[in-house]
Length: 175
Length: 216
Image 1 (cartoon, rainbow over the protein chains, first blue to last red):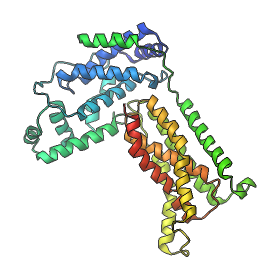
Image 2: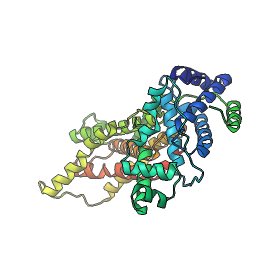
Image 3: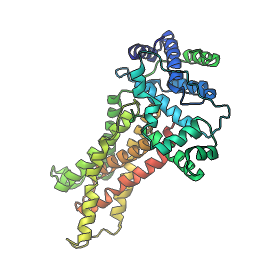
Image 4: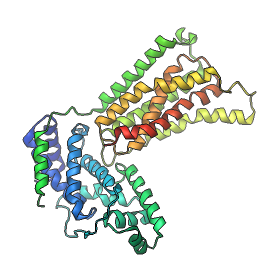
Protein backbone atom coordinates (compact mmCIF):
# COMPACT_ATOMS: atom_id res chain seq x y z
CA UNK A 1 0.00 0.00 0.00
CA UNK A 2 1.27 3.45 -0.85
CA UNK A 3 1.80 5.48 2.28
CA UNK A 4 0.09 8.76 1.47
CA UNK A 5 -0.84 10.93 4.39
CA UNK A 6 -4.57 11.20 3.78
CA UNK A 7 -5.19 7.46 3.56
CA UNK A 8 -2.96 6.72 6.55
CA UNK A 9 -4.75 9.35 8.55
CA UNK A 10 -8.12 7.80 7.65
CA UNK A 11 -6.89 4.32 8.61
CA UNK A 12 -5.56 5.63 11.90
CA UNK A 13 -8.85 7.31 12.74
CA UNK A 14 -10.61 3.99 12.09
CA UNK A 15 -8.01 2.12 14.16
CA UNK A 16 -8.55 4.49 17.07
CA UNK A 17 -12.19 3.43 17.00
CA UNK A 18 -11.16 -0.24 17.17
CA UNK A 19 -11.34 -1.21 13.46
CA UNK A 20 -8.91 -4.15 13.19
CA UNK A 21 -8.74 -4.58 9.39
CA UNK A 22 -7.95 -0.86 9.08
CA UNK A 23 -5.32 -1.19 11.79
CA UNK A 24 -3.69 -4.18 10.07
CA UNK A 25 -3.50 -2.21 6.82
CA UNK A 26 -2.13 0.80 8.67
CA UNK A 27 0.59 -1.17 10.44
CA UNK A 28 1.70 -2.85 7.22
CA UNK A 29 1.92 0.50 5.46
CA UNK A 30 3.74 2.04 8.42
CA UNK A 31 6.15 -0.87 8.58
CA UNK A 32 7.12 -0.35 4.95
CA UNK A 33 7.35 3.42 5.41
CA UNK A 34 9.53 3.02 8.50
CA UNK A 35 11.80 0.56 6.71
CA UNK A 36 12.49 3.18 4.07
CA UNK A 37 12.69 5.96 6.63
CA UNK A 38 15.37 4.30 8.73
CA UNK A 39 17.33 2.88 5.82
CA UNK A 40 20.87 4.24 5.59
CA UNK A 41 20.47 5.76 9.05
CA UNK A 42 20.78 2.50 10.91
CA UNK A 43 22.89 -0.60 10.42
CA UNK A 44 20.88 -3.10 8.31
CA UNK A 45 21.18 -5.72 11.03
CA UNK A 46 19.25 -3.43 13.39
CA UNK A 47 16.67 -2.22 10.90
CA UNK A 48 13.95 -4.78 11.61
CA UNK A 49 14.38 -4.38 15.36
CA UNK A 50 14.00 -0.64 15.12
CA UNK A 51 10.95 -0.89 12.85
CA UNK A 52 9.35 -3.31 15.31
CA UNK A 53 10.18 -1.12 18.31
CA UNK A 54 8.61 1.82 16.53
CA UNK A 55 5.47 -0.18 15.69
CA UNK A 56 5.21 -1.12 19.38
CA UNK A 57 5.49 2.56 20.31
CA UNK A 58 2.87 3.45 17.73
CA UNK A 59 0.58 0.85 19.28
CA UNK A 60 1.21 2.10 22.81
CA UNK A 61 0.68 5.73 21.84
CA UNK A 62 -2.34 5.44 19.54
CA UNK A 63 -4.24 7.99 21.61
CA UNK A 64 -1.60 10.65 21.03
CA UNK A 65 -2.49 11.01 17.35
CA UNK A 66 -5.03 13.73 16.67
CA UNK A 67 -6.96 12.76 13.50
CA UNK A 68 -7.46 16.42 12.61
CA UNK A 69 -3.72 16.74 11.95
CA UNK A 70 -1.42 15.16 9.32
CA UNK A 71 -0.35 11.60 10.07
CA UNK A 72 3.20 11.31 8.75
CA UNK A 73 4.67 14.13 10.88
CA UNK A 74 3.25 12.29 13.92
CA UNK A 75 4.70 8.98 12.78
CA UNK A 76 8.02 10.67 12.02
CA UNK A 77 8.13 12.15 15.54
CA UNK A 78 7.57 8.67 17.02
CA UNK A 79 10.19 7.22 14.65
CA UNK A 80 12.77 9.91 15.44
CA UNK A 81 12.27 9.38 19.16
CA UNK A 82 12.89 5.64 18.79
CA UNK A 83 15.85 6.25 16.48
CA UNK A 84 17.58 8.63 18.88
CA UNK A 85 16.85 6.19 21.71
CA UNK A 86 18.40 3.45 19.62
CA UNK A 87 21.51 5.55 18.94
CA UNK A 88 21.88 6.12 22.66
CA UNK A 89 22.29 2.43 23.26
CA UNK A 90 25.93 1.57 23.11
CA UNK A 91 26.61 -1.09 20.59
CA UNK A 92 29.07 -2.04 17.97
CA UNK A 93 27.88 -3.64 14.76
CA UNK A 94 30.85 -5.37 13.21
CA UNK A 95 28.88 -6.58 10.26
CA UNK A 96 27.82 -3.10 9.27
CA UNK A 97 27.57 -2.15 5.64
CA UNK A 98 24.87 0.30 4.88
CA UNK A 99 22.44 -0.51 2.15
CA UNK A 100 22.96 2.20 -0.42
CA UNK A 101 20.29 0.78 -2.70
CA UNK A 102 17.34 1.50 -0.48
CA UNK A 103 15.50 4.66 -1.38
CA UNK A 104 12.29 6.43 -0.59
CA UNK A 105 9.29 5.41 -2.65
CA UNK A 106 8.33 7.72 -5.46
CA UNK A 107 5.72 10.39 -4.87
CA UNK A 108 6.56 10.91 -1.21
CA UNK A 109 10.03 12.39 -1.61
CA UNK A 110 9.09 15.90 -0.50
CA UNK A 111 7.30 14.69 2.65
CA UNK A 112 10.11 12.30 3.47
CA UNK A 113 12.73 14.98 2.92
CA UNK A 114 10.96 17.33 5.29
CA UNK A 115 10.64 14.69 7.97
CA UNK A 116 13.90 12.87 7.32
CA UNK A 117 16.57 11.81 9.75
CA UNK A 118 19.14 13.58 7.59
CA UNK A 119 17.23 16.78 8.29
CA UNK A 120 17.56 16.09 11.98
CA UNK A 121 21.29 15.37 11.76
CA UNK A 122 21.80 18.50 9.69
CA UNK A 123 20.96 20.59 12.75
CA UNK A 124 24.07 19.35 14.54
CA UNK A 125 27.52 20.88 14.13
CA UNK A 126 29.39 18.81 11.49
CA UNK A 127 31.89 17.49 14.04
CA UNK A 128 29.06 16.01 16.16
CA UNK A 129 27.04 14.67 13.23
CA UNK A 130 30.13 13.02 11.76
CA UNK A 131 31.10 11.09 14.87
CA UNK A 132 27.50 10.02 15.55
CA UNK A 133 27.35 8.60 12.05
CA UNK A 134 30.69 6.85 12.45
CA UNK A 135 30.22 5.43 15.94
CA UNK A 136 26.47 4.93 16.36
CA UNK A 137 25.34 4.31 12.78
CA UNK A 138 28.30 2.72 11.04
CA UNK A 139 29.40 0.99 14.23
CA UNK A 140 33.07 2.01 14.26
CA UNK A 141 34.97 1.98 17.52
CA UNK A 142 35.86 5.28 19.15
CA UNK A 143 39.50 4.79 18.09
CA UNK A 144 38.51 4.12 14.48
CA UNK A 145 36.15 7.10 14.46
CA UNK A 146 38.91 9.29 15.92
CA UNK A 147 41.29 8.21 13.21
CA UNK A 148 38.69 8.71 10.46
CA UNK A 149 37.46 12.09 11.68
CA UNK A 150 40.74 13.56 12.86
CA UNK A 151 39.28 14.20 16.32
CA UNK A 152 40.86 12.88 19.50
CA UNK A 153 39.18 9.88 21.16
CA UNK A 154 38.07 12.05 24.07
CA UNK A 155 36.57 14.58 21.69
CA UNK A 156 34.75 11.83 19.79
CA UNK A 157 33.12 10.69 23.04
CA UNK A 158 32.20 14.23 24.03
CA UNK A 159 30.78 15.01 20.59
CA UNK A 160 28.71 11.82 20.50
CA UNK A 161 27.30 12.60 23.93
CA UNK A 162 26.55 16.25 23.15
CA UNK A 163 25.18 15.44 19.72
CA UNK A 164 22.75 12.83 21.02
CA UNK A 165 21.56 15.18 23.72
CA UNK A 166 20.95 17.86 21.12
CA UNK A 167 19.19 15.42 18.79
CA UNK A 168 16.74 14.42 21.49
CA UNK A 169 15.85 18.07 22.04
CA UNK A 170 15.31 18.63 18.30
CA UNK A 171 13.05 15.69 17.48
CA UNK A 172 9.99 17.80 16.69
CA UNK A 173 11.55 21.16 15.89
CA UNK A 174 14.07 20.18 13.22
CA UNK A 175 12.72 19.84 9.69
CA UNK B 1 10.24 -4.01 0.58
CA UNK B 2 10.03 -7.57 1.91
CA UNK B 3 8.73 -7.64 5.45
CA UNK B 4 10.51 -9.59 8.15
CA UNK B 5 8.33 -12.58 9.23
CA UNK B 6 8.76 -11.41 12.82
CA UNK B 7 7.26 -8.08 11.85
CA UNK B 8 4.26 -9.87 10.34
CA UNK B 9 3.81 -11.78 13.58
CA UNK B 10 4.17 -8.59 15.61
CA UNK B 11 1.59 -6.81 13.47
CA UNK B 12 -0.84 -9.70 13.89
CA UNK B 13 -0.46 -9.60 17.67
CA UNK B 14 -0.83 -5.81 17.79
CA UNK B 15 -3.99 -6.00 15.69
CA UNK B 16 -5.32 -8.68 18.01
CA UNK B 17 -4.55 -6.43 20.98
CA UNK B 18 -6.26 -3.36 19.50
CA UNK B 19 -8.73 -1.55 21.75
CA UNK B 20 -10.53 1.69 20.96
CA UNK B 21 -8.34 4.61 22.03
CA UNK B 22 -9.62 7.83 23.52
CA UNK B 23 -7.85 10.50 21.50
CA UNK B 24 -5.90 13.09 23.48
CA UNK B 25 -7.63 16.35 22.58
CA UNK B 26 -5.83 19.47 23.65
CA UNK B 27 -8.96 21.21 24.84
CA UNK B 28 -9.61 18.29 27.18
CA UNK B 29 -6.10 18.60 28.60
CA UNK B 30 -6.49 22.34 29.03
CA UNK B 31 -9.83 21.78 30.74
CA UNK B 32 -8.28 19.30 33.15
CA UNK B 33 -5.48 21.75 33.96
CA UNK B 34 -7.96 24.60 34.49
CA UNK B 35 -9.94 22.35 36.85
CA UNK B 36 -6.75 21.56 38.78
CA UNK B 37 -5.95 25.27 39.08
CA UNK B 38 -9.50 26.04 40.24
CA UNK B 39 -9.32 23.23 42.81
CA UNK B 40 -5.99 24.63 44.06
CA UNK B 41 -7.54 28.06 44.49
CA UNK B 42 -10.45 26.48 46.36
CA UNK B 43 -7.99 24.76 48.73
CA UNK B 44 -6.39 28.14 49.48
CA UNK B 45 -9.80 29.70 50.14
CA UNK B 46 -10.88 26.87 52.45
CA UNK B 47 -7.63 26.08 54.27
CA UNK B 48 -5.91 29.48 54.48
CA UNK B 49 -8.63 31.99 53.59
CA UNK B 50 -8.33 34.87 51.12
CA UNK B 51 -6.65 38.10 52.20
CA UNK B 52 -9.01 40.75 53.50
CA UNK B 53 -8.70 43.31 50.69
CA UNK B 54 -9.50 40.71 48.02
CA UNK B 55 -12.40 39.43 50.08
CA UNK B 56 -13.62 43.02 50.14
CA UNK B 57 -13.24 43.32 46.36
CA UNK B 58 -10.15 45.58 46.38
CA UNK B 59 -6.96 44.70 44.53
CA UNK B 60 -3.39 45.88 44.96
CA UNK B 61 -1.55 46.89 41.78
CA UNK B 62 1.50 44.70 42.40
CA UNK B 63 -0.76 41.77 43.25
CA UNK B 64 -2.51 42.10 39.89
CA UNK B 65 0.66 42.52 37.82
CA UNK B 66 2.73 39.84 39.54
CA UNK B 67 -0.05 37.31 39.78
CA UNK B 68 -1.06 38.04 36.21
CA UNK B 69 2.47 37.22 35.10
CA UNK B 70 2.57 34.00 37.11
CA UNK B 71 -0.81 32.95 35.77
CA UNK B 72 0.10 33.66 32.14
CA UNK B 73 3.42 31.84 32.51
CA UNK B 74 1.64 28.89 34.13
CA UNK B 75 -0.95 28.74 31.37
CA UNK B 76 1.71 29.07 28.64
CA UNK B 77 3.79 26.25 30.10
CA UNK B 78 0.77 24.03 30.76
CA UNK B 79 -0.48 24.58 27.20
CA UNK B 80 2.97 23.64 25.88
CA UNK B 81 3.00 20.48 27.98
CA UNK B 82 -0.47 19.57 26.70
CA UNK B 83 0.72 20.12 23.11
CA UNK B 84 3.77 17.93 23.73
CA UNK B 85 1.42 15.01 24.33
CA UNK B 86 0.61 15.03 20.59
CA UNK B 87 4.05 14.96 18.93
CA UNK B 88 4.51 16.19 15.39
CA UNK B 89 7.62 16.96 13.41
CA UNK B 90 7.42 20.67 12.67
CA UNK B 91 5.89 21.63 16.03
CA UNK B 92 7.70 24.34 17.89
CA UNK B 93 7.42 24.81 21.61
CA UNK B 94 9.07 28.17 22.14
CA UNK B 95 6.24 30.55 23.06
CA UNK B 96 6.54 30.02 26.81
CA UNK B 97 10.08 31.40 26.78
CA UNK B 98 8.90 34.95 26.08
CA UNK B 99 6.45 34.82 28.95
CA UNK B 100 9.18 33.38 31.19
CA UNK B 101 11.44 36.28 30.21
CA UNK B 102 8.69 38.73 31.16
CA UNK B 103 8.13 36.98 34.50
CA UNK B 104 11.87 37.22 35.23
CA UNK B 105 11.33 40.98 35.54
CA UNK B 106 9.88 40.39 39.01
CA UNK B 107 12.99 38.89 40.69
CA UNK B 108 15.25 41.11 38.58
CA UNK B 109 13.43 44.24 39.74
CA UNK B 110 13.74 43.11 43.34
CA UNK B 111 17.45 42.43 42.95
CA UNK B 112 18.15 45.71 41.13
CA UNK B 113 16.33 47.78 43.73
CA UNK B 114 18.11 45.97 46.51
CA UNK B 115 21.52 46.26 44.87
CA UNK B 116 21.11 49.94 44.05
CA UNK B 117 20.12 50.78 47.62
CA UNK B 118 17.21 52.81 46.25
CA UNK B 119 15.22 51.90 49.30
CA UNK B 120 16.12 50.71 52.76
CA UNK B 121 16.80 47.01 53.03
CA UNK B 122 13.47 45.43 53.88
CA UNK B 123 12.96 42.34 55.93
CA UNK B 124 13.88 39.89 53.23
CA UNK B 125 15.81 37.66 55.54
CA UNK B 126 14.14 34.30 55.54
CA UNK B 127 11.30 34.34 58.04
CA UNK B 128 8.41 32.04 58.79
CA UNK B 129 6.19 33.94 56.37
CA UNK B 130 8.70 33.70 53.55
CA UNK B 131 9.01 29.98 54.18
CA UNK B 132 5.21 29.70 54.10
CA UNK B 133 5.12 31.19 50.61
CA UNK B 134 7.99 29.00 49.45
CA UNK B 135 6.56 25.77 50.84
CA UNK B 136 2.93 26.50 49.95
CA UNK B 137 3.80 27.54 46.41
CA UNK B 138 5.58 24.26 45.72
CA UNK B 139 3.03 22.08 47.53
CA UNK B 140 -0.05 23.70 46.05
CA UNK B 141 1.35 23.09 42.60
CA UNK B 142 1.34 19.34 43.07
CA UNK B 143 -2.22 18.86 41.81
CA UNK B 144 -1.41 20.70 38.56
CA UNK B 145 1.80 18.70 38.25
CA UNK B 146 -0.10 15.44 38.74
CA UNK B 147 -2.58 16.34 35.99
CA UNK B 148 0.19 17.28 33.57
CA UNK B 149 2.23 14.14 34.31
CA UNK B 150 -0.92 12.06 33.80
CA UNK B 151 -1.38 13.76 30.44
CA UNK B 152 2.22 13.20 29.37
CA UNK B 153 2.08 9.53 30.34
CA UNK B 154 -0.92 9.07 28.06
CA UNK B 155 0.74 11.12 25.33
CA UNK B 156 4.06 10.75 23.58
CA UNK B 157 6.41 13.57 24.61
CA UNK B 158 9.56 13.40 22.52
CA UNK B 159 11.56 15.57 24.91
CA UNK B 160 10.88 14.29 28.43
CA UNK B 161 13.49 16.61 29.93
CA UNK B 162 11.89 19.75 28.54
CA UNK B 163 8.44 18.43 29.38
CA UNK B 164 9.59 17.90 32.98
CA UNK B 165 10.96 21.41 33.23
CA UNK B 166 7.71 22.87 31.91
CA UNK B 167 5.58 20.76 34.25
CA UNK B 168 7.63 22.21 37.10
CA UNK B 169 7.30 25.81 35.95
CA UNK B 170 3.56 25.45 35.28
CA UNK B 171 2.83 23.81 38.63
CA UNK B 172 4.99 26.29 40.56
CA UNK B 173 3.24 29.21 38.88
CA UNK B 174 -0.24 27.86 39.56
CA UNK B 175 0.74 27.04 43.15
CA UNK B 176 2.08 30.49 43.98
CA UNK B 177 -0.71 32.16 41.99
CA UNK B 178 -3.24 30.47 44.27
CA UNK B 179 -1.33 31.13 47.48
CA UNK B 180 -0.97 34.82 46.62
CA UNK B 181 -4.70 35.13 47.30
CA UNK B 182 -3.82 34.45 50.92
CA UNK B 183 -0.42 36.18 51.20
CA UNK B 184 -0.92 39.83 52.13
CA UNK B 185 2.65 41.10 51.61
CA UNK B 186 2.71 43.40 48.60
CA UNK B 187 6.33 44.46 48.25
CA UNK B 188 8.50 43.90 45.22
CA UNK B 189 11.11 42.25 47.45
CA UNK B 190 8.75 39.68 48.80
CA UNK B 191 6.85 38.98 45.59
CA UNK B 192 9.92 39.21 43.35
CA UNK B 193 12.04 36.88 45.44
CA UNK B 194 9.81 34.69 47.56
CA UNK B 195 7.01 34.17 45.05
CA UNK B 196 9.49 33.43 42.27
CA UNK B 197 11.45 30.95 44.36
CA UNK B 198 8.69 28.26 44.36
CA UNK B 199 8.59 28.45 40.56
CA UNK B 200 12.34 27.97 40.37
CA UNK B 201 12.32 25.08 42.85
CA UNK B 202 9.37 23.41 41.12
CA UNK B 203 11.15 23.78 37.78
CA UNK B 204 14.24 22.05 39.16
CA UNK B 205 12.18 19.28 40.74
CA UNK B 206 10.19 18.83 37.53
CA UNK B 207 13.33 18.68 35.43
CA UNK B 208 14.85 16.07 37.74
CA UNK B 209 11.85 13.89 38.57
CA UNK B 210 9.32 14.06 35.75
CA UNK B 211 11.41 12.64 32.84
CA UNK B 212 11.65 9.24 34.51
CA UNK B 213 7.85 9.21 34.89
CA UNK B 214 7.03 10.11 31.30
CA UNK B 215 9.79 8.43 29.28
CA UNK B 216 8.42 5.78 26.89
